[in-house]
Length: 247
Ligand code: IPE
Ligand code: IPE
Ligand code: MG
Image 1 (cartoon, rainbow, N blue to C red):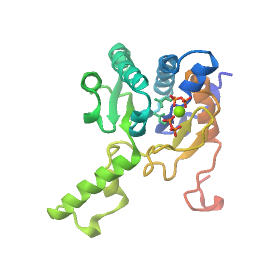
Image 2: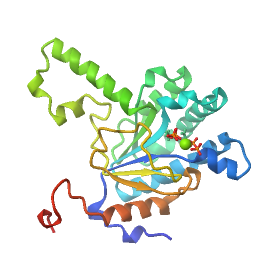
Image 3: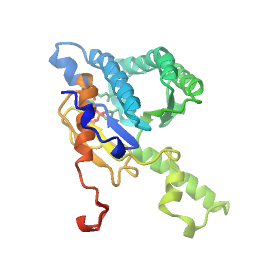
């Protein structure tokens, strides 16, 4: 199943975003509590991060916790927050060994103190790394991000820093939490769900979407290769017709 040699290194996406879904259903199928699924999802995070860095992907964004996920039972939310602290602490060394920089998007200030602290430490301790940026979407939702951007745009307009005529796609991008990150060329969602769940709505305007039935805890390097090969076989037209595209 290892298809890495079929990947065209000249046509790699710069940025891959993943909606990691299906932990709970995977656990249920194994007769275990949902948290067991989250714990096992960490291995998939490790695999995908490693595979992406090895291939030369520059940005990998993982949707780890949405603003809507606070509505889950408190026990599950607490377990997820605990897992976050534990995983970041454990993985900092590996991130540094592999020259991977950690970043986060989302309403980080609203995370429990311990989780925020671990995250900020992870970001600080990996900030000089250059090979790849791993972006965790944490307490993230796209509507939250767009709302925040609009607030800042209005206040910059009020103070005269930004005129109505200045409002281009690029300027809007510069107000988002992904301002230093290119839009993802490829968005993957696991677990057979075909929806976006409030993730990167502005940024995925022209992303290729890839859905797989595999549950996140079962997602391995080979599945990532499969998604990339699928992406590389698509024709990205951006509104043009085939004949207008470069050969
Ligand atoms: C994804 O798996 C992890 C998070 C959303 C935090 P789920 O927990 O959503 O698993 P399912 O979708 O219920 O199977
Ligand atoms: C989306 O998964 C959020 C994350 C992967 C963190 P959910 O499982 O929360 O999405 P819905 O509720 O099924 O749309
Ligand atoms: Mg889910």
